[in-house]
Image: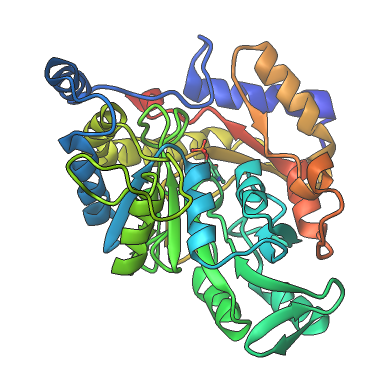
Length: 389
Ligand SMILES: *Cc1c(COP(=O)(O)O)cnc(C)c1O
């Protein structure tokens, strides 16, 4: 068996077979379609901000692409999560079940509602919430009173669950939906990373009451910054639009606002970029899939490291390619991170588990052995679609 140093160097050399020798970053956007044309149109007509046709078009295009009945565009994925949770009925003092292995935005959005994140375990095939231990756990710590699930240890209502499709790989959403149903939990999918990913042919983000997308600069498509709320419920879609646009009652000149609301509307100029990016999504997805194949082939020669692969019955967008170290080599993570970054290949560990971060240290949580193990063994590697073209 190779020592840690030898193992890290062979991993680096395998990655280089795909990335070449010049420096590469983790994920860079590609603007090879109608971006200039649509942006120019915004500038030429003066419609850069809260009025213009691209917002409506982007929302319609997103709904069509994902098969969601409605899509509401907002300023970023975090605000989309905030509003989705609020409209799903999350109240101050509630608990919301989220994986510990996710980006901090998931927990922050729960906190914006005045609610408390309650961290749950992940599993290692999909990298998302594991429905099996979750069900056992809820059975042991909750009781159902008046159709609400009460955490007997904290006496708070557990109101919702937010599965996240990690790095674009769909979670076991049907099984998680079933747990949500049995425990009267609202289901909000954090599909920020999974535009273009499907579970049994159905697009991620369309299973729950709400789904949330992100178009940050490092995501599969970008609007600079941006997000969207997906829902199948017309009234919820209308409410989401209203509450993200200052709750202004339409009128030719009067300023009447009928609830405390948010200025979360996506500007037209960002939506213009989004329309152009969405047109190229199928080709980005194809490139990302071929990139996966190239890495897989390159890595075949080293044992102890494998590549995260789309789970059964899933179609993954392969947003971020991910190395998985075997348990034998988990001590090599930091050495691989160092040797790759030193050599111009940008790599990142997965996020620090959220229950260990200072703002969330005192939040309730399950036992998390798998999440802890995954945290030690996952490394994201360069994933831009341009790497194959
Ligand atoms: C990117 C991301 C978000 C949203 O991020 P924004 O930068 O606010 O658009 C939310 N959750 C996860 C898991 C993400 O990766």
